[in-house]
Structures are given as C-alpha cells and as structure tokens.
Image (cartoon, helix red, strand yellow):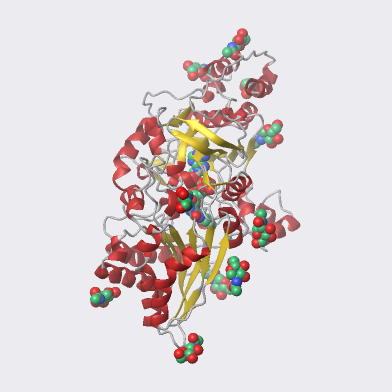
Length: 639
Ligand SMILES: Cc1cc2nc3c(=O)[nH]c(=O)nc-3n(C[C@H](O)[C@H](O)[C@H](O)COP(=O)(O)OP(=O)(O)OC[C@H]3O[C@@H](n4cnc5c(N)ncnc54)[C@H](O)[C@@H]3O)c2cc1C
Ligand SMILES: *[C@@H]1O[C@H](CO)[C@@H](O)[C@H](O)[C@H]1NC(C)=O
Ligand SMILES: *[C@@H]1O[C@H](CO)[C@@H](O)[C@H](O)[C@H]1NC(C)=O
Ligand SMILES: *[C@@H]1O[C@H](CO)[C@@H](O)[C@H](O)[C@H]1NC(C)=O
Ligand SMILES: *[C@@H]1O[C@H](CO)[C@@H](O)[C@H](O)[C@H]1NC(C)=O
Ligand SMILES: *[C@@H]1O[C@H](CO)[C@@H](O)[C@H](O)[C@H]1NC(C)=O
Ligand SMILES: *[C@@H]1O[C@H](CO)[C@@H](O)[C@H](O)[C@H]1NC(C)=O
Ligand SMILES: *[C@@H]1O[C@H](CO)[C@@H](O)[C@H](O)[C@H]1NC(C)=O
Ligand SMILES: *[C@@H]1O[C@H](CO)[C@@H](O)[C@H](O)[C@H]1NC(C)=O
Ligand SMILES: *[C@@H]1O[C@H](CO)[C@@H](O)[C@H](O)[C@H]1NC(C)=O
Ligand SMILES: *[C@@H]1O[C@H](CO)[C@@H](O)[C@H](O)[C@H]1NC(C)=O
C-alpha cells in the first residue's frame, strides 16, 4: 500500500521525463509503539525515494525541494516567501509537488467566493447556501482552509449580498494538501521548509485564535485522517486496559460515539466538532471527565508525529520521551504534525446532570444575585473534589439585570441521589438568600447519552469580538478575602458588558495515567476555567472598533482578573491572542524547556502559530495593535 501509492505519485511526476522508477519494497520503518500504525501511516517517504526524486529530476532540480531537513543551522531569509515574490514557487513547481502528493494539492478558494464577481466561482445559489450555513461549524470543518473566527483572517471574504465587493484570500492559506497518508505530510513539510513557504496545520479550524490559518501558507489539512481503532485489552508498557487509537482528524462526537459502541468512556471536550487528537490534546484538553481522570493530554499513551525535518517518529515514554512530554500540553502546530495517538479509555459510567437558572427580579436584587453566584463559587472546591463539573454562563440581560444559568452542572459517575445529596447544601443557601430555583435532574447511563442529551450543535463564525480566559487557583474560592476579591473582579467585567462562560473544573490527580507532561501547571492548581467574552460588537464593526474592544478586554477587564490571581495562568486553547506575557500565562514554568525543545526540533521555524511556543520570535506584517490577524507576511524578528 505504502509503496504503490508513492510509486503512483512519482510515476505521475516523472511522466514528462519518461523515466522509470523502481521503488524499494519494505521501505517502511517499524513503529516502536505498541499499537500498530494505521495503513496510511505505513505510506512513508524514505531517503531512497527522496534520493531518486533528486536524481530523476535533473536538470530542473526541484527535487531538492523534497529533501529531509538536516540538523545543521542554515541561514534563512528573514521572511517567508509570499505569493508574487520571485522566490514563490512557479506553477510548474506546484504541479510537481502536486504529483508527489498524489494530486491531493488544493489551490485555495475562500468559502464565500461564490458571493463575489471577482472569483470565477461566483454562483448565487452557492452563495446563498454559504450565507445560510455560515454559523454551522461543519461548513468550516469540511473546508480545507476556513476557520471559525473570521476576524483573525482579516474579514476579507465574508458572505455578502453585494457581489461587486472584492473578496481576497486574506489570512487563508494559499494551498492546502488534503492528506490521507504520512508520505504526503512529509513531502509537504519538506517542500515548505526547502521552499521557505509558511506552513500551517488545519484540523477543524476551531481554535479561538484561528491558529490553523496563515496568508501565503501551505496548509496540511488533517480532516481526512478519520480512523478509530478500539483495543479492549491494550497492553503496552505499564498500561493494561481499554484504549483508542485515533487519527488526528477524528472529532469529539465521533470518539464519544465509538466509546458508546464499545461500552467504554472516552475523554474529550464538550463540543461536538472539536478535533480530539489535534489542537485539543496539544493544548491540554479539558473535559467533563477531567474532574474524575485528569486532562485530555494526560490520557495519551503514545503519538505518531511527522517532525519539522520531515521524519516520522513515535513519541512515548521510551521513544522521544521529550516530545512525548511536550506534545501533551505544549500546544499545537509547534513540534510537528501529529498523525494519530493512543488514549486510555475507562469503563462506562452513569452521569447525572442538573440545570437551573436564576436572574435578578422582584425578589432578587443585584446584590442578592451576586451573593448567589458567590455562594456557588464557595462550593467550587467541594464540587470538583466530589468529581462534579460545572458549566455555566453569567451575563447582563439589561440595565442592572443579570442572568446565571447552568449548562449544566454535571455529575460524572453519579446517580441522581448522589448528585442531589452533593448539591443540597448549595441549593439551601440559594433558598436562604431568597433565590428560588427549580433544578432539573436528569440521569443517564453513559457519557455519550448525557453528552447527546445536553449539548446540541454549536454556532460559529459570527463573532468579531475577542475573548480571554483565566485559570483561577483553588485558593481564590476558599480564602474569604480572595473569594470576595474574585467576585469583585468578575462582577466588574459582567457589569461592563462581558459574558462569563464558566467551568467549575479541576483535573483530577490520577495515578493511573502519566501526568508528567507539558499541560500548563496553572491547570493543576485550578478549580475553574473562566472564559470572558469582550465588549459586544456588531458583526460589521470596523477593525478600529474591534481593536478598541479587544484592548478593553485585555488591559481593563482581564487586568482585574490577573490582579486577583497573580502567577496563575490562562488556557491557551481558549485564550486571548493579546495575552500579556503569554509565555507565563499559557505555559507557566514549563516555558523555558518548551522553548529549548522548539529550537531543537524546529531550528528553521517551519511551524508557527500565534501564541505558540517560539512565536515571539516572529511577526506578521501590517497589523493593527490589539487586532493581530494572519493576513500578512510572516517574518522573523531581527535582534
Ligand atoms: C465551540 C468550541 C468548544 C470548545 N470546547 C472545548 C472543550 O470542551 N475543551 C477544550 O479543552 N477545548 C475546547 N475548545 C477549544 C479547542 O480545544 C481548541 O479550539 C482546539 O485548538 C481545537 O483543535 P482542533 O484541532 O479542532 O482545531 P484547529 O483550529 O484546526 O487546530 C488548533 C491548533 O492545533 C494545531 N493542530 C491541529 N491539528 C494538529 C496536528 N495533527 N498536529 C499538530 N498541530 C495540529 C493547528 O495548527 C492549530 O494551531 C472549544 C472550542 C470551540 C470553538
Ligand atoms: C532508484 O532508481 C533506480 C533507477 O533509476 C533504481 O534502480 C533503484 O532501485 C531506485 N532506488 C530506490 C530506493 O527506489
Ligand atoms: C523541467 O524544465 C523544462 C525546461 O525548463 C520543462 O520543459 C519541464 O516541464 C520541466 N519538468 C518538470 C518536471 O518540472
Ligand atoms: C541542483 O541542486 C544541487 C543541490 O541542491 C545544486 O548543487 C545544483 O547547483 C543545482 N543545479 C541547478 C542547475 O540548479
Ligand atoms: C493536483 O492534481 C489533481 C489531480 O491531478 C488535480 O485535480 C488538482 O487540481 C491539482 N491541484 C492543483 C493545485 O493544481
Ligand atoms: C417573591 O417572594 C414572594 C414572598 O416570598 C413570593 O410569594 C413570590 O412568589 C416570589 N416571587 C418570585 C418571582 O419568586
Ligand atoms: C466510578 O465509580 C466507581 C464506583 O465508585 C469506581 O469504581 C470507578 O473507578 C469510577 N470511575 C471513574 C471513571 O471515576
Ligand atoms: C429537564 O432536562 C432534560 C434534559 O435536558 C430535558 O429533556 C427535560 O425537558 C427537562 N425538563 C424540564 C421540566 O425542563
Ligand atoms: C441524540 O439526541 C437526539 C435529540 O437531541 C436524538 O434524536 C437522538 O436519538 C440521540 N442519539 C442517540 C444515539 O442517543
Ligand atoms: C470585597 O471586595 C470589594 C471589591 O470588589 C471591596 O470593595 C470590599 O471591601 C471587599 N470586602 C471585604 C470584606 O473584603
Ligand atoms: C453596521 O450596520 C448597521 C445597520 O445594520 C449600521 O447602522 C451601522 O452604521 C453599521 N456600522 C458600521 C461600522 O458600518
């Protein structure tokens, strides 16, 4: 399979040169991982193939574009090459590259191009479809380069009913490879590195800061890597038990459904279409299961990864242990392209959810409302210690009017009587405050059923505002003075118009998994993740208005949050692209080690994403302060 596919690609490439190429049999390096590789992971690029490409391609010499990277430091231009530059690959060279990747190269067309006369794709019906489905994440997930927060793309091609406007690629990548096997990823990385092209990795495009896009980039699109293997009795190194091997294109709802079919529970996020093995685990990954078993990244037993030098390796406790550490929490698009990973699974558990909401009203003054929220926060420690997970919103719904709502409070591994008994003291406190609530308890016999019964399809694509997050330490909810100060900081932001999407969550200490990884140390101390959406903006807000609102969020509202939690952190996957001292906030004390590993494995800076490890060494041209987009050329800072 491996060799025949590559042979086909190379035969296509060489057709014009009328040469024959014989490929070696068994060119594949065996995986030191205990789960065998997927078939498409055995389709690998080898030295011999690259050497033959090189030889056969004279005199055009484009073959050197496919060479593996060396460890030697080589002088590089300060900026990545960009469309229109003399150094940008010719159409002929792109065609050669396309042939090596088996025709999987896509020349990017913005999703909304059918709405514009300046694109040959102009088509009123297609435009109407895109316009109507713009907030459906599947539209963006299924597109090779679209992402879910157009504000970071530069908003250069939104759906419109005025076809005379101009649509440009903006921050979208120029080309994308819809990869279905490892050799294509290796060739893409080698080509981008040798041709000095910006490289991005796109899975679902769900990242809060659109870390999967980039102007003038070649994109590796992992969406089609959908395989899921279940091992009822995985036995490898110290672990014996159920496990899944997941291709990096697999998303949450697919993993949960596979777990349900196999009578087990998997750890994933709460949103249906977020990738599991891509940005989610790379960033740490919080889950309704976290309070029971730890972070998503803690569950990883091994990973398969194409390194920036083009080599394909396994990262585990005994193979590239430094990468095994860094790939679990150190951030996506940094150390390589993960093609699959193996995660531990757990026996089936019951789940009981509780929902209710309360607002200010005739019997609930503004101060009483906040006293009710403070009462909840005072239970954050107790609830997470008992294994519960809370998901809620706090928002102003009018002048001096506020709403609190559970979405829901989630009792993992709890029957209804167990959850009722846990929350009764809290409900009594609300009652004593005069806040009348009618809790709705629902018991499910599996995580999948609870997930499916709780969360519907999400909406994306509309927001132009920024958001930020804080991992407040446990002490903020335990020490009375700190609890009061935390409440004050939260209340300030909500009074100003912020929206709090809150999680009462704590990654459990779990001796059954390897928690010695790069997950932000702030996670280990927290019992909450508070996401704060910045000032509300109309979807047609100008860049200047967006930048101004983002500045308020970062330097005023969030400053108060940082001030009441000095030394704590923020969650990189749901973070502020303008986060001050992002190295400390997103990576904590691990940053120096992560940075050193970045220099070691990616000396040429092939992989870049905003706020990723090492990103401080780069900039994108032509940016407004507080509105960094990917619409510009990527350049290295000169020191
Ligand atoms: C509606 C919504 C709900 C969410 N819910 C949760 C939640 O419950 N828990 C949680 O922890 N997070 C949650 N998130 C945040 C989520 O973890 C991040 O958005 C994450 O980055 C998504 O990863 P992705 O691979 O799906 O997306 P992408 O945006 O495609 O990728 C994110 C980053 O990872 C990189 N990347 C992707 N795949 C690979 C790969 N194979 N190898 C190397 N790098 C790769 C990309 O280059 C990019 O930098 C949510 C986000 C949204 C929008
Ligand atoms: C490279 O090509 C030559 C023919 O030009 C062939 O003899 C040789 O086996 C090939 N080697 C590999 C490793 O493909
Ligand atoms: C090699 O270069 C020649 C002349 O420049 C051109 O005609 C030919 O198509 C090129 N071949 C490839 C594979 O790029
Ligand atoms: C072909 O590539 C080799 C090595 O990359 C280089 O030394 C040589 O000068 C190149 N030839 C041409 C004609 O560009
Ligand atoms: C790559 O090749 C395939 C198959 O030949 C073709 O359909 C596709 O359009 C090509 N891509 C580009 C960017 O030319
Ligand atoms: C407000 O309190 C009064 C007196 O306790 C009660 O009769 C009434 O039902 C309450 N109203 C609401 C909306 O809870
Ligand atoms: C669920 O609870 C049972 C019984 O208390 C326990 O044995 C099991 O380990 C728990 N499972 C998880 C995932 O916490
Ligand atoms: C309680 O919650 C469940 C699950 O969301 C829902 O199906 C049901 O309609 C709710 N019941 C009431 C009375 O709101
Ligand atoms: C998921 O929920 C929907 C409605 O919310 C329901 O129609 C469907 O049957 C559920 N699926 C499963 C597998 O339980
Ligand atoms: C509680 O915090 C507020 C600021 O939000 C402050 O004004 C007040 O003095 C604090 N009260 C106590 C008892 O610390
Ligand atoms: C946005 O659109 C509204 C009407 O929908 C208009 O009143 C407003 O002026 C527009 N704002 C900008 C900045 O164009």
